[in-house]
Amino acid sequence: MATNGSSLSRPLGLLAELTHRCPLGCPYCSNPLALDKRSDELDAETWARVFREAAALGVLQVHLSGGEPAARRDLEQIVKAARGAQLYANLITSAVGITAERMHALADAGLDHVQISIQDSDEKSADRIAGYDGASQRKRALAAEVVKLGLPLTVNMVVHRANIERIEPMVELALALGASRVEIAHVQYYGWAMKNRAALMPTREQVERAVKDVEMLRQKHRGHIVIDAVVPDYYARFPKPCVGGWGRRSLNVTPAGRVLPCHAAEIIPGLEFWNVREHSLDDIWRNAPAFNAFRGDDWMQEPCRSCAMKEKDFGGCRCQAFLIAGDARVADPVCHLSPHHALVEELAQVRADTAYAYRG
Ligand code: FES
Figure 1 (tube, rainbow, N blue to C red):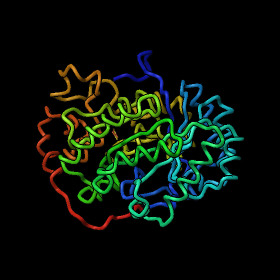
Figure 2: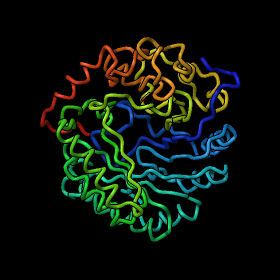
Figure 3: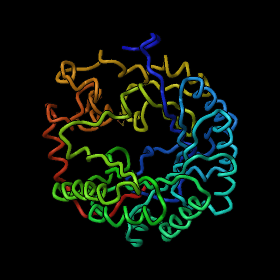
C-alpha cells in the first residue's frame, strides 16, 4: 500500500461540494441520501485555505459543485479564492437560480469554465426529470449568458431510460447553446440513482443504439464539439477505472468538510474519513485511513490480483463492489471475470415504470 512513500501520486482535481442544497430533485443525484445541513457548511475562508492546500499538493483544477453551488451567497468570494490559489475554476451548475447579473459577477471573480446539466432536449421531459417546472428554459438562458461572456461551456447530459432515445437532439441542443464540449454520462447507480434504478435502467437494445448514435455524432460534428461518453456500467464487460484509481488522482470535499476519495465513499462501512476542520489536506491525502484503504494492490483479491488490467482499471469501483457484492474488496462485479458478474446482468433486467423518488 502506498502511504507516505515517494510512490504516492499527486491529486490533479478537487471536487468541492459547496452545499447539498439544490432547487432540482434529479432522481439520479450523486449527493448522498443523508444530505449535509446548511448550518454545517464550511465558510468561504475555510474553502480558501483548502484551495491553497490543494494547490500545494499539486491540484490543478477545482470543480465547484453541489447541490447547486449558486445556493451559496458567497460563491463569488469562493471563486476568487480558487483563482487566488492559482486553480482552474470550473463551475458545475444546474443553472437554476443564477441570474445574468450573477453570472457576470462570477466571471469577474475569475471563473474559467462552466458546466451546465441538461436533462433532455424535450422541455416537458427535462422539467419532469429535474422535478422543477421551467428548469429547461432557465438552463438555456444561462447557457446563452455564459457564451456571451466568452467562457467555455460544457453541457453535461445524464442518460437513462427516459431520454436515451434522444441523444442526437440533445447533442444538437448543446451545439445550439454554443457548448464546446458535451459529456454524455449514463446514470451510475449509487445513492439516489440506486433508489430509482428500476425506473432509470435502459434496455440493452437502447444502450447499443446509444453507443452507435454517439459514434455517428462524433463523426458528424468533428471539429465543432468534443463528445465524451462512457459505456454504462451495467452493460459493460470491463469496469471503469473509477475516479482514476482510489486515492490516486482526486479528492472530494463535502459541504461539511469531510474529505472522500470519491463522492460515494461514505456508503462503505468501516472507513474513517478526516475533516479539513481538523487536518490539512496534505495530511489527509497521505494519512487518512479512508484514502489508504484501497491504494496500491495489497487489498486486492483474485481475479484482480493477478490480472494484467489492474494497472489500468484498479479493480474498478469500490463502491459498486460493495453495493452489488456486499464487499468493497472484491472485483467490481461489472467485470465479466468477477464471480458476481451474473448479479449485474440480473439487475440490468429489472425495470419498472414507477414514479421517481426525487432527491430530497
Ligand atoms: Fe466510489 Fe467508484 S464511486 S470508488
